Amino acid sequence: MFEIEQGVRQGGAISADLYKLYVNPLLNILSGTGLGGHIGDIGCCAPTCADDVAIISNNPMELQMLIDIAANFSKREGYTLQPTKSVVIPISTSTKSIEIDENIWNINKNPMPVVEHSTHIGIQKCQKNSAKLTAEENMKKSETITL
Image (cartoon, one colour):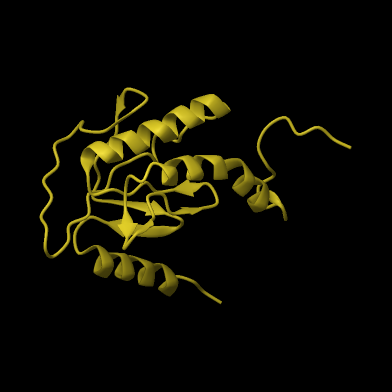
């Protein structure tokens, strides 16, 4: 027997499963709102891999509500959200142009930076020509791997 005081061991065999048990209530709360991104009638407002959670919405007010839910959950559970990773990436599509003013979204009363690119689950996400640039950035990574 041993006492776990906080977190899980990095790279541990069961660490990912333990974290999924820990974060699943947040994901249930977020998806239960019915807010955020959808594919057809399937809610997909918070795609997640391990401790990387992306919150997706095409409505700025809904996005702020989902951010507030995640921030409140982190306070209640006693962990701090990573401020350098907590950013907004407005994604442009071929059918819709997005103009974003700075300081629209806040996390714990602090403005969230609006950026052109960031990494989520090890994959570079880009604001413009998102699919093409994302593929190009990740191809560059694969080219640098040496055997």
